[in-house]
Length: 273
Image (cartoon, rainbow, N blue to C red; front, top):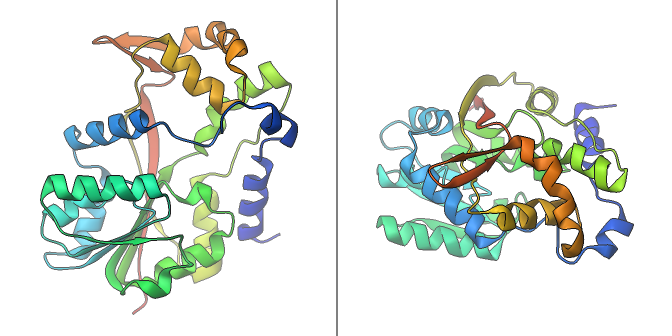
């Protein structure tokens, strides 16, 4: 089995059984606006992540940047603030609107293409540096995705993602409330093998940590967030509290769940042009 096929098989194993989706009262895949608002606020006040430093170094003083799966622009708008020409691609309407709002708030101009990569690759100009942060785990057809990133970059490609699939921490909850096992991957190392296979390039890998940005005001928010993720009806969500309580810490009136440090990796390579 190829690296790309293994990646796809791992992601397909994450598909939630239809019987659980049918019983769910809301999508387990959605993100409440307050989640992204808090993540964006945390990003604005935190030191620049490794990904931003690498992208800036590859772009130099005048290089252009393409951000694929930009979200609200956490990984690329600081580069626009520094004077780099920025194009963003984002398929989600709410995220795309948020990108435009944050760009306006920062007083920078950036082109925005609403659509999914690589479907819209032909609609964007080639850039010196292509960035894609926290997107790969949502991409089953990873081979064409990576190949299109490489083709769009004149100097280099920078990809950020967590070391493991971000829903790995949900596995014990699924097992406890539904008796359903979840996969252990894919991981950043699996993506590196896809890049080698597709492009013949061994990417550089920078592993790093940063404090987790997601916090909760109260237990109602915690149970709503995790309850929707594991497709529990609202009436059953209190069942999660005794499972989550050992993982909850409080600081400055904010509640945090799980490890306070998130483990990330930035993959990057120079293009062969």
